[in-house]
Length: 503
Ligand SMILES: Cc1cc2nc3c(=O)[nH]c(=O)nc-3n(C[C@H](O)[C@H](O)[C@H](O)COP(=O)(O)O)c2cc1C
Image 1 (cartoon, helix red, strand yellow):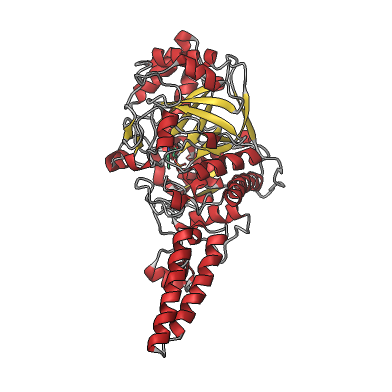
Image 2: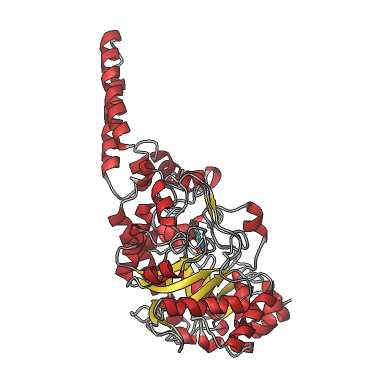
């Protein structure tokens, strides 16, 4: 883009100067072009705005529509609470936290406050001062010999392939500075993940990075890679909320020779990982695989990620843990509302259980089988704001992962083009011209600040509720209308009682 802009822009200016001299009287045209050229040169050399680096003049149209009067914005673009899957106000909060500028809002809430749907934290008259220290959680039970002290909030699985090399570098450097982990996604460990940040290495049904010639799990390759110092945890991917039971999809346009080499596949082909694992086919097999990975990795924490579907299957895994006495170190629960780089719409819209009921079900099952203290529960699926994090913890999670929030921190504008290789911000593309706009120094700082400021706000909310630690966060901290009446009977009896009396 940069070179094209320089050559074509200069050529156009020279041509219009010649034409205006020849025909006379149109000298303002080259003057305007020279001004635009100057603005363009400024934009392609700045590092703050990927869109303007990639589209030095046209990029202003986006900012123009966004910054004109609120009325114009209301009529022509989106309102604060519009925008899907993430409304503008939530995206703005991430952008501001990532830029480390004030995240306050003026004039009060923009949400419609309807008491029947309302959900909020019960603040205390005896509010405390927030903790400065950011929370950490120890992952690894008695069967794990290399437990890992993780941050409460981490980067969810997104592969190199679905995200660009510069996006991965920025995520990993941000994770290093903020001491949180970066999940590799099922595409394997690339050189861009190796910037010094902690890694959770994800293994999907394609076994990318640890597969043999037939695409089956290779214990030798796994043993070699799992012992990399930065790999702190290993996650077996069973399913993902946005497409449970479908398997990963890497569109052919994004499957570059470099990615193909890392994954041991053929470049240019659309890569669909099988829907299920070939290393096991039932609950006992899964747990024996956990045990195998634990031994091969030298005792690192091993867990699995899934979106809850058939609840009996999850209960079966719990039962088998007690039979075999093999306990994973963590389980990641991904809600049906979770994100993806590419998936058939039916899978995104209508398969799998949303996060909240899934967390409640998983906790209940783990308690029923006396397993709750044996493993950590990690929650993901639109856990974006500090309120989302605390809600997930109140519903039984020990810690949280997030994918799309960290994409916003990298400059994603929710263009919804991750599956086309045409992401305009250089985040979810393999197009070198578009990736050039993403400045890793600036974006890694944003990743660091988004994480830090989000957790800091969590600390403030806990303190506002008169509590000191995350262990004290539970459902009694929240108030809620009767929208979820069936859960409220169990979890919010006092609030439900109040709402009912009111009618
Ligand atoms: C671009 C993109 C790529 C993803 N790649 C993977 C992946 O390789 N493996 C996986 O388990 N989940 C993957 N996910 C899902 C996320 O890890 C996460 O479960 C989900 O997005 C959670 O929702 P959130 O984005 O609201 O945090 C991907 C999501 C996105 C947006």
